[in-house]
Length: 148
Length: 133
Image 1 (tube, rainbow over the protein chains, first blue to last red):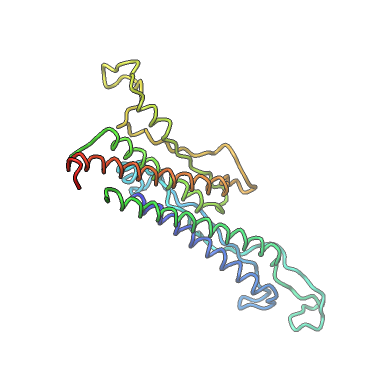
Image 2 (cartoon, helix red, strand yellow):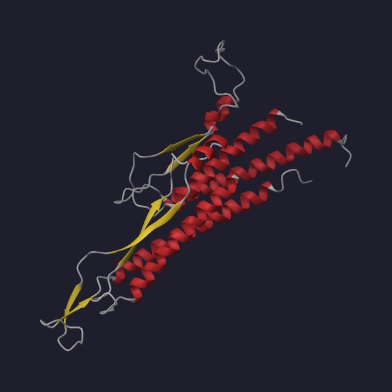
């Protein structure tokens, strides 16, 4: 059914934005983590989003034959990668994690940047909620066709 | 099955509206996807063209080029991808404000179509029951 398709697309957007918010929260929580299991300071994580559309798949060909729907399936997180940008080096010789020159490696997390990302992610989440509610109200209205 | 021209037209318009809704939903879901280009759906112009009563040219063979869009034309709903613009540095061209406005507009359009269809059906019911309830 076509209108359920829009609901699934909105749900994929919601889950992708939630994963983004989760990675941003992890970055902010670990903004001062100087040691990790892998050794060294925490590295900033970034969620990679990609749109799901495969024009060649059987499913989309079938859908195209049945109805005139666009061959799209929303968005998904293809992976969470580490930001390769350099770490912040702070001179603090008394710190237990300081290297032989007295510098401590701090995560490459910029709180300002993370806050901006968090706001864009939550706004995008809200936009998807609006779309979902609009789909729902349209669908509920069609159930009233022919009543009284 | 009672099929009037009005019911057919409303059904086509609702189909187009649902396709448009899917495209807008997908655009909104991909608002943060780098490189994503928005989908655009148009059907209202083709629909009003299909409703034009006079047909200027007549097709005598089915392989002739179409001279006017008919209501049963599968290409009544056109989906295209706008690859010409970029709104941000990452190549994404989804404008959330425009998409939200389009979403609200399309929703109201759909709801009014449902309302019209309901009143059309209640007219039919009135004639079936000869005005009695």
